[in-house]
Length: 219
Image 1 (cartoon, one colour):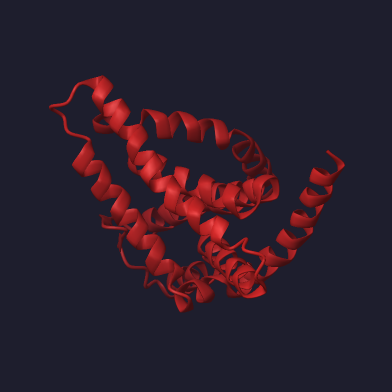
Image 2 (cartoon, rainbow, N blue to C red; image 1 turned 120 degrees about the horizontal axis):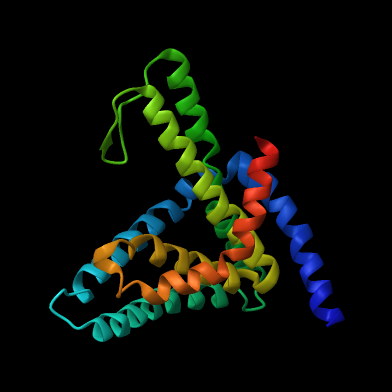
């Protein structure tokens, strides 16, 4: 137990440094290392997987089973990638740290938010964001704030929490689960997304409480 606690404290100290770097450089590093492109591709793959396996003609039990299979398909590559960074090789460990900074940077979105702020000051906010057309700039800002809060809760607080508990495998498994839960939602995915939604609700319970406290204090 003492060994685990020492490892947790070491990860927490490392995480504090990585978060500082991610706030400033993480978003650029994500684009430079193609992590952003890989994450976008993974999102598209998850959506395609759901469209292919979640057939309305199938029974509820079959769709639940297929949802579990889809979740495993998304989790296995993420866990495999995380484990590959723990080869005892300094180069691979450095790559793993860079990928982690890039992922945290995507959660902060510091430079994207700064650009939005400048657009808002100049009265030049685009009214179409994320394939949604808003009535005015206030609607755009509300959407950006809500989206940023969600990213902070999942990608920053949740990813950081599970990194401290389980290292990169814990963080990657959690983020893959969050991706599945975000895609397999709504009435059409009620059965297919059952396993992802329930498991994510459990794994996100503590990060959700932490992020709520932090956001309330910030407000």
